Image 1 (cartoon, one colour):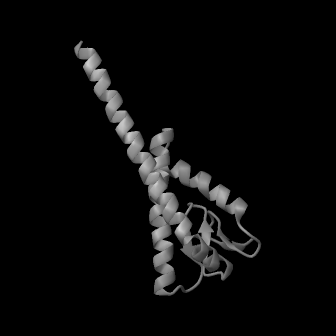
Image 2 (cartoon, rainbow, N blue to C red; image 1 turned 90 degrees about the vertical axis):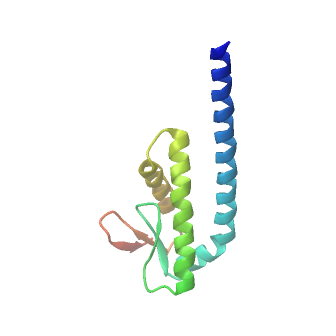
Length: 123
């Protein structure tokens, strides 16, 4: 009987963690969507670009507001990578690498990409 109670407790905790993770991922998705238009504008302007680390970085001088948008995006990306890593049983670096590859592939012509050698190149 004690084993059943312990097992039931583990299941309840696991479900609670799953629900909390789903809620946090939903919140992250909403924040990404709300910033997407501005992030795309900054990419098109050549102000920011994607890096091989799965994050955004300033290509040239960015205003305080532009930096704030970039930093918020990067903070949310890092949190998402951590959540996905936890869910998938890998490291956040593995998730970030996958995201970087996807972001490089989706980049539009003229956008800046920072490769592992530290050099910015336009797609």
